[in-house]
Amino acid sequence: MLTHWHTRLALLALFTLTSVLAAEDASDASGVPTYRSTVSEVRVTFFATDENNHPVATLTKSDFAVVDNELVVRNFRSFTHSDETSLDVVALVDLSESVAARFRVGMSDVLQLVAREQSTPDDNIAVVSFGGMRPAILCSNGCRASDSVSRLLAVKGSGTTPLFDALILGADFISHHRRAGARPVLILFSDGNDTISLHSPREALEAVLDEGALIYSVDMGTSENQTSGSTFLRQASDATGGRYFSLRFSPQDAAAAVPNAVLEDLRASYVVTYDLPSHQAGFHSLRLLPTHNLNLRFHSRNGYNYEHSVR
Amino acid sequence: MKSTLLLALALTSVSAALAAPLGIYQHGTVVRMRMGDCALMHRGFLNAFGPPQAAVAEEACPEYTLVTDKVVFLIVGKSSNQLVPLAEVVDFRFQNKELAVRVDDARHESKFAIKEMTLRAEWELLQKHLEDQLNDSPHRSVDTSLALRNPE
Figure 1 (spheres, chains in turn brown, orange):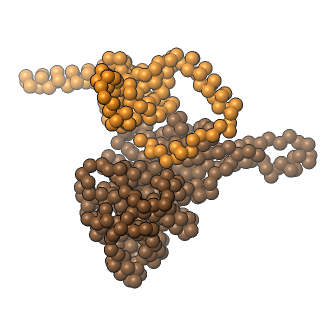
Figure 2: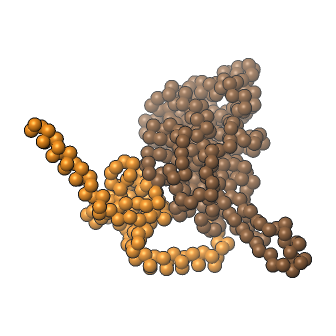
Figure 3: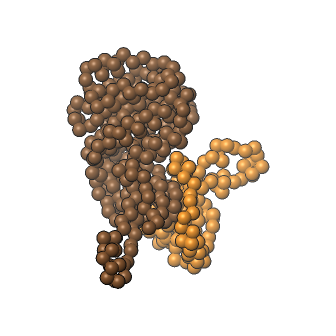
């Protein structure tokens, strides 16, 4: 079984349990036949929201089915609450010219997050800004300190938008600061338009998925219509199992909603495991769908990579 | 008195209308689901002979494999968000060349176009054949660029 170790630590992983390995040597020596068995299990962390976009606290395993590479899976090995109890949050703040009109709203959101860090000491928060040539870490794991807050307040928006590079930096930060039992989350305040990154959107999302991080995007775009930037933000959130919020119609509501949503989603998260339905190597698309109540929407990452083990 | 009679009559009619379709539902299980193109649903004279419509072409419609005792149906939704509840047993009936699926919690029916119909025995043979093919080439790789494809 060859899966990336990050994936295992993250929200979804494949485990291959190779049994009777310990007995192998002994049985070879004694001439007793050795039976090898390989069991592949898929593990998915998810939460559900209702028609009002509120997390659903109580779910049962009969409320949903998993569609794994087009195959419908209803028989689960296990179904439990997630054991993640705290958050590792990296706030990515777009400081470019294109979001200048909403810049203050974004910063106010970030300061709210930082203030929250004090009330939830188990949570770690870092702030990364991007505007200009490359992203920069404004503060990490101690952003509530007065000098960090004044640094955040002094930030001015201008320049180009290295959005994808910022996602890479955020993913890299998470990989170096990972804590057991903590959910890695990227909160992305942006209009979704990249103008100068060295990395592609695919590379950026791959890096985030490898870390098992969820992207909560806050769309700071001002256009009344759906833009390519908005589409990217929505897709990034969907692909990683996070959520998308827009400041277009209700800036204050969205600003207040995001930190709460991240925390509520954590508390309402479940883990389901099932036997790998198909041993086809490569990417397995993943989707959780309701069995009865079509108003429920399930949020999980949109797939995983499976590779055959050769022993 | 007259109003009471009218009310009783109305209630009887409503309950009869609700009860009638229940008896004619067939049962099946959805075993596969994928997002396919919406061509079947949007195919019409204007779409076939008119100018290309990018918005329609890009839309993905859900496609379900519904297995019943004798027949396997491939049904297609009319829009990207038309979902079949994926319960173990799905109730459905035919209506005007479409398949009306009962949505339990919403207490209504959702209509799907029938794309294909296959005898179950034939379908099972085909599945076995595909499975054997897959097992014969276990190391065939899949395009991992799909990793970033949005489920929609």
